[in-house]
Amino acid sequence: MVEEKEVKQQGNKIIFIYRIVVSIIMIVSIILVYILNNLGNSKEVGAMANNISNETNIIDNNNTIVEQVTSEESLRKLNDWKLILVNYENKMSEDYIPPLANIDNERQFDARAIDSLTQMILDMKAAGIKNIWAQSTYRSPEKQKRLIEESIQEYLEQGKTEEEARSLTLRGIEEPYRSEHNLGLAVDFNNVDNEFEDEPAFPWLVENAANYGFILRYPKDKEDITQIKYEPWHWRYVGPEYAKEMKDLGLCLEEYVEYLKNN
Ligand SMILES: [Zn+2]
Image (cartoon, rainbow, N blue to C red; front, side, top):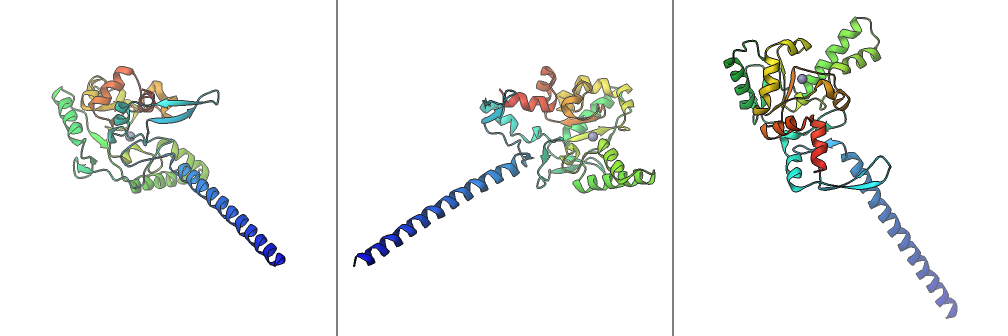
C-alpha cells in the first residue's frame, strides 16, 4: 500500500513539472511571436497612414526612454493619406494602390489631388508662364523596376561593373515602393533637371504652390534630412492645409512628421 502511494505521488509530481514546463514554453513562444511581429511592421508605412499611436516611447540621445505624446489633432494629421511619408527609411506598403485619374493619355495622378495639379498649371499659364508641363507623375512599382534595370544596362554598356552600375543607378532613382511617384502624389516638371530653377515657373511655384497643396519636396538646405539631392523640379501634393503650415514653419516633410509626433 505504502509503495503504491509513493509511486502515485511521484507520478503526480512528474505531471505537475510537465505542466509547468509546457506553460513556460507557451508563454515564451507568445512573447517571441509578438516581438517578431512588431519588428516586421515597424518600418512599413501603412496603406493610409504613418502608423502613429499617441504614446510612443522613443529613446533619446542619452539612451534613456522618454515618453512622446502626440495630440489628437496631430494624430488626425499623421493618419491622413496626404501626409504619407515615403523615403529612404519608410517604404510604402506594397498593398497600397492609389486611386488614379488621367492627366492625359500617358500620365496619371492621385484622383483626389489631380484637380489641384491641373488648376495650378492652368493658373501658371494664365499668369504668363507658357513653358510648364508635368513630365513625370505616377509611376507603377513595375515601371520603377523597369527604369532601374534600363539604367543598370546603360551603365554596363559604358563598361561599369555590375556593382558600380547598380550603385550609380540608385543615386538617381529610388527603389520600387520607396519613390513618391509610386504614391501618385509627386510631379516632376519640364525637363526634370536643375535648369528648372532658372525658369519663370520655379519662383512662381515657390510663391504659390502651397495654396494648391504642393511643396518643394527636396529643398537645397534639407539634403541632410531628406537624403536626396536638391530637386527643383519635384513637387509633392500634401494638401493646402499642411503645405501652408510647412511653409510657415520652414519644415520639409520629414521634419513636419516629426514635429507633429511631438505636438
Ligand atoms: Zn520626382
